[in-house]
Amino acid sequence: MTTELSPDALPELLERARKDYAALAARGLSLDLTRGKPAPAQLDLAEDLLSLPDGRHTAADGTDVRNYGGLQGLPELREIFADALQVPVTQLVALGNSSLELMHDCLVHALLGRVPGAESRWVDQERIAFLCPVPGYDRHFALCERFGIEMIPVPMTPDGPDMDEVERLAAGDAAVKGIWCVPKYSNPDGACYSDETVARLAAMSAAAPDFRIFWDNAYAVHHLTDEPVETADLLAACAASGNPDRVFVFGSSSKVTFAGSGVAFFGASPDNVRWLLANNAKRSIGPDKVNQLRHALFLRDAAGLRAHMARQRELLRPKFDAVQRILAAELGGTGLAEWTDPKGGYFVTLRVPDGCAKEVVRRASEAGIVLTPAGATHPYGDDPRDATIRIAPTFPVQDDLEQAMLGLTTCVRLVGYEKLSA
Ligand code: PLP
Image (cartoon, rainbow, N blue to C red; front, side, top):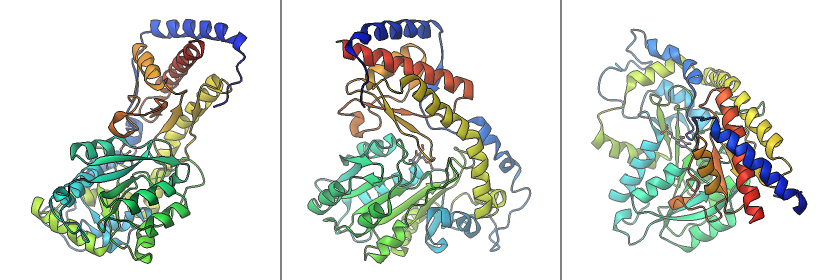
């Protein structure tokens, strides 16, 4: 962040920011830029799901989807998502409506049972830690907090986590049992893991024999440009490096079809898949195959999935463009902010001067613009620099989004110039 500001200009800039903020507060707005939810218009694209499976109840292999059973999920649906998630169909499991739920369950099974390769249950160990690339997804961190798993922050780079740090920590500490990764269009800064990052994750030595990469590929098909990013295949790389069990792949159709009624996926080595299915067999007599059949009929095949995501992109692109346009027009050259320009996914990260993020969020909230709490992007809600703000542009209608972004930039100017004047 370089400032092009001459000290003489500061009083006037602060004065203008104060006036703009007073005008903003007087408008009595009520806008929300918090959660990365699909907008109703995106959900409308999948409205046909509501009239499927249209009287059909037999899957391609003859399974009666109305009945119990089929723990691995319908093969025709797994086939549609296998390429996108880079998991062979035989190693992919289609389950309930939420991948977060699956991540939760995998942690619980690892705590209370034994993952392949484990010498003991995680809960029997004195200390368990996960590496947490930051900024990251608050719900990953909430899961760690819930289960008393220590979180060790590792800085993100545009190519993924700082791999020197990851290698050092994973090799040096047997309590480090895993790492959270959102490999494509990451939440929140849109980073995509480079081939080198993937190769190093697969091949690095880990002190814990049961080390797991929680590979949350939530945005695998959520491109915003004509150049879809392809990340390297971690599952294959792990197998090739002699660490076949190292990765759990997660994904879902939450931001493809319906965020509350999609289908979630788990992919891994044959041993890991057997482990999950054996654990699942205790908690369920089978997933919701009617919903899985509905999805298979609606999406048809991998090309159908891509075509559907192209329609999503048409709705999302103008919103992400507006965010870039407004940030550049209002904050460009001020030295008060830097931001990401993601090629996909659901978020933009805004970085403000150190010590300003919480205050920007507070001022925005007082003016009727709700933002994700500052700090949520870091373990324990603590961003040591207090500089990161997550923007979620998908849900509001275009006009509300633009109003909220303008308001946010006013708050950044106000707080930033106040700090410079202090
Ligand atoms: N993983 C990431 C990185 C997310 O951003 C989200 C939702 O915002 C989820 C998982 C939630 O996925 P699901 O709806 O499948 O539980």
